[in-house]
Image (cartoon, rainbow, N blue to C red):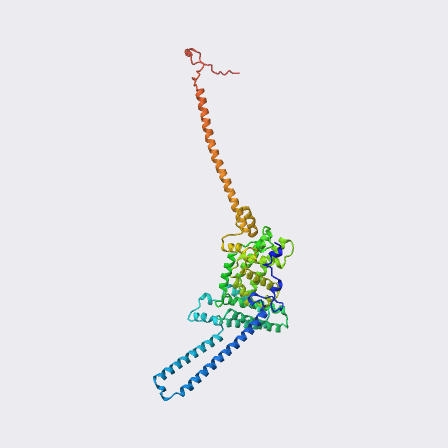
Amino acid sequence: MSQRSERRGIHVDQSELLCKKGCGYYGNAAWQGLCSKCWREEYQRARQRQIQEDWALAEKLQREEEAAYVSSHSSSQTQPPQSHSQPSLATFSKFEEKKTNEKTRKVTTVKKFFSPSSRTAPKKESHEGKTPSPSITRQSSIETDRASQDFLEFLKTLQKPGREIQKQSRAFIESMGNKKDLSAEELSECVQDFYQGMSDRLLNHYKGSSEKVDRVMDQVEKYIMTRLYKSVFCPETSDDEKKDLATQRRIRALHWVTIQMLCVPVDEEIPEVSDSVVKAITDVIEMDSKRVPRDKLAFITSCSKHIFNAIRVTKNEPASADDFLPTLIYIVLKANPPRLQSNIQYITRFCNPSRLMTGEDGYYFTNLCCAVAFIEKLDAHSLNLSPEDFERYMSGQASPRRQDDPAAWLQSGSRVNPALSQIHQNLSDLSNLEKRQQQVIEGAQSLQTELAEWQDSVAREVQEILERYPLEIKSRASAIDAENVENDRLPPPLQPQVFAG
């Protein structure tokens, strides 16, 4: 199978990353392939149409109620005097009941149409009468205090505009505290409207200097989103948490996917490549620890640059976009980042839109969204597998890494995950050490047996020699004068004499 056919299920044309409206900015799957600018325009138009339809329906219900009331009232006036009888009273009571039902239905419908979000109504009722816990109401923390202090220090350098920016930012944060029951889309709309208004005023103040405006907006975003993080990240009115669990289960079910299946041009046996892969996995996991959308984007960008470096070192040439996306998919599968969908939605909703529309941050973020979408739709054709093998791998009945030959498993595992390869190598070394230890123990026991046998053989030989040549102990030799019985007749021994000289 050719390389082109292998990549048919993974390859994404770069034009598909752009906005479907053809404006030239990067699109987003969460915005139905549109950029943030075009999506806001479509959202505003759809919202305006919905409001008009709601008003029209409410007016229609009002007219129907008034017509029904007038008709019933006029018919009751034309009744004969016997209308005060029991049947007439029953008819009038039925009319009153119908009128009450119609009025209740109309009021409920109008409230539903013009409430901030029909989905949030149960949430609002559930919070009534409850006192928020101190952990939720307490906004001050080390990170928020640091962000506030940095924001104030930055605004001092702006002098007069800084005071106005601080005033508007604090007022916006206070106003957002009363909008916790809004849907995630409506919270996003509020934040994006504030960004747009602040950006327009700054452009007017700085005479169109976009560089200065971007610098100020970065600080505004950092301050606002650090303060609002607890209330807008994975809000209760959204299904972000449900999507997170579904994505994590999906990635865990795809743990068997190998580099070869994704056609990833990375050789993890090269130390520098392995180090880049580990750093890329670390970055995409660390993204969840940040509060500011811009900081989360920075980790995505860092992860992507490590991927490009791994591809460059492996191929000894610059990496292409066709190589980048499969490798990014592989990194996401190996990392299984926590709250991945919530982080993507958080960046999409509350990041400064200019960062997502252009630049390397927008490009890498769009590719990450494509990678997640690909993982959700991954099938046998995308991995060049038969449907039967794909189902067996997904169900856990088989695994492409299970080989009868341990060496083959090691070779496959080394390309998939260096940690698994190292574990297998360590286990193999321990097995060899155990065999060698057993050999040493057996040798020691054999030596001990041989020593005991040698000792017994030496003892037997000594005994045989002793029996063959018995030991004879002779009497002790006597002194020279021992037999002289007349020693008492001998002259006395000579004594030394001193002669005078």
